[in-house]
Each structure stands twice: as structure tokens, then as C-alpha cells.
Image (cartoon, rainbow, N blue to C red; front, side, top):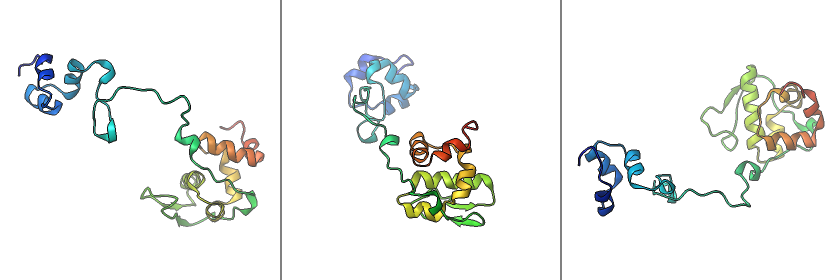
Length: 169
């Protein structure tokens, strides 16, 4: 094939993949797709991630994003949060599966990172009580970046968290 890809040849040879066309023509698969496919059928990750051409579509009207569907555990009382405040801790894999689950609590940045992980991934009040400390949580709350749902639910249960650093976010 020459540099100018003949769209009619491509359409007439459906058994030839875009990868093969790209290899033989020297063009990229994206260039081939732009020449051959109409805009609404450009290559996207489609049917089960196989890279098939799929029409672009909007989510259904009743769609709720995962961040709003994901369960969030909130403590019954801040005083029950009696977790460690010093030293090095390793979170269990159901809370942190990142491969960096060991936290030095004497490093303020690592402590805040661990608290964010626990607040987002806790599966029970016991997880919260074991890994969070209420005094440190209150001290760090205003500076922590949290998903809106997590912050909303915790501040609804414990209004003092929202007022502690209202001007600092």
C-alpha cells in the first residue's frame, strides 16, 4: 500500500486488521481509523476491553457514579478511635493493597496518607477504631483531601470536624 490509504480497499478487505494495515502502510492505527471509520465509531475500549469499535454513548439517566455507590463506614463516636499515633504500622491488605502499606506515623505526610486510606477503605467500625486516633484525626481533618461523600458523611455525624478548619480547605 502507498502512503495514501485507500479507504475502499480497507472496506473491501474486512479480514485485514488495523494493526496489519498500519504495519504495511506505515500509518498509525489512529490515522487508519480516522480515514475509515465515521467519527461516532472511532476505536475505543469496547466489548470486554478488546478494543473493538463501539459507538460513543452517554450513561443512562439514572446512572450513579461508583464514588456515590461505594459504601463508607463512619464511626459511632470519635472517642472509639484509639489507634496508634507513633511508630510504624502496616495496614492489612483489605485496607491497603498498594504494595506500600507500611506507614511511619511520625512522618505527618505518611500519617495523613494512611488516614485517607483507612477512611476510604474501612469495611467496619473495628477497622476505624484500630487504625485511627480521634485526636490526630481532628487535628489533620481540615488538610486531608477526601472524596466528597466521605467528607460529607463524616461531617454530618461529627459537625466539629467541619468546623475545626472550615477556612483551611
